[in-house]
Length: 95
Image (cartoon, rainbow, N blue to C red; front, side, top):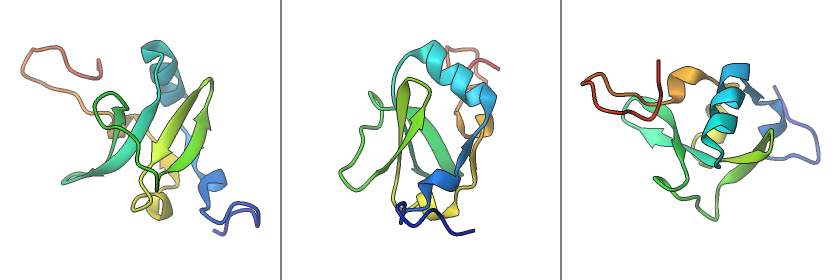
């Protein structure tokens, strides 16, 4: 699906799931989508800082920086892109 002519990156077509918006607002920081061995992953920018080549997407009062390598493959930013740990230690996401 092509993006808007003034949006050559196609970022305007990417939806953000409501639970992701809630998570971002609760964490009160910006995030970045980058590549991991398991696919796209959503991390706070204090863990994975943005790059100059990233594409920006507004998420309520915050920004999601999207790796230029991921933006063309994304249709939606979902909660399953938020990492969590199952070993009992505090993870990035509470599930």
